[in-house]
Image 1 (cartoon, rainbow, N blue to C red):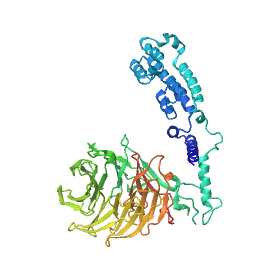
Image 2: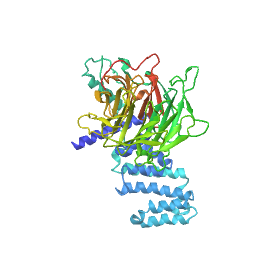
Image 3: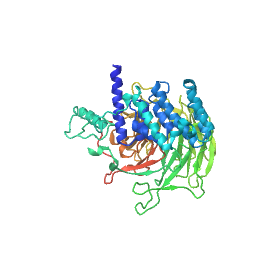
Image 4: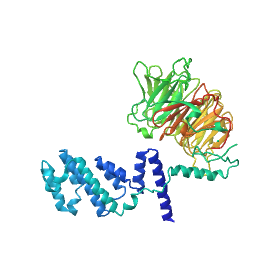
Length: 568
């Protein structure tokens, strides 16, 4: 049984290698060859030998055999290292030659002491070719050609490699695609309304023939309008926080490097009011002061830090932190107006009161909530205690006079703004077998009466006045990374870690439209955060793992995101 499983695994790796080769994912193919050890790519090995990439040649060879495995392996490593040594001598790089002699050819001192001494003596010669043994060396390219001939013979004779040198010649072209199609065709037998000419366009959802309307699923970029706002950092970062300006004229992106970047639309003949749109590109906006909205991240381990960002109702200032001090920035000048809440404990969520932007709730990693007055630079109340784990979400409702908090304990707490006393605590109902923990985010709709709770396993809608759950959807499409209400409160945009984006209706949490990653997402990236336009309910933005973000709207001629609901 174990042998058949191993062979099945080998065949799966081989068809994957064929796909990677055919689609030009060369580095991924090389990595899979080395990690699996099922196929030794002789052509690649020849190329790196002739190019003098001897370190890579040894790294690649080491994935299949080690120096001490047998005589053929020892000889192969020796020939490669010897050429590397000779080329260092030829370049007059004595320090490198000595390093190679002692570290890489040192094994000769125990297996062939005379040969080791001969190589050591080469260090004393102005030209190693004056040694009779190495006089036929010639030039570098000829020498590499001879080395290639030697290692080719040794590899073919090596019993550890001889059965890994030939890629299956009987493997049909695009075998992986064929297997996917074949699997979908098998599923198709069980459809309620089988389509005789069904075509599989995605493998992220089970194949079915609904009675996915064609507009219910967007499979490529023609199904929506979009623009890409690039990473302007000049260095690797991720979009970990994303907010539209309340005026609808710009988007603020918080990077994992602690820097906030602002993109603004300006009035244009195609966009007279200067509102956020995919019809024209916004400008990367910086004030004449030259300041950047950069949080102090000195001493912060950025990979483990929790990003926080909140924007005042009139877009006059923004407050944010990425694991360090919270900073208050002027949105016109980007100047730091003040800092507060030095860790520990680190801030894990920030929320501004919608009517009184001087009132802020700050959640921390020690499960506490601090109520802070920005203008007076002081705490209004010491701490609100109601959670057992770090705070992961905060939201105000001025109409209901409530502050709602959520934590990594999967609890949602309702607090009176008048007295700051806890009115009720409700647990998120978790799927069977899933522990009651993990980040939960909360957000009010524009009326501040419905509350959206987002956990990686589900979406849940609460009637905030009754403080009870009225709708819940356990996701079948993998973990949710982020979700938000549309500005009209009737739609929810949810980004999944596998790249799908779902557009749900609020009241029944039915899926109206599924946007495939093939429609908007570059290869190898993932969606981290999603934000909704505050004035146009069919537009949203999604922040990506390379520091860029997308603004997305329905395709030209489409008024909205789908109408038909189906399961995902």
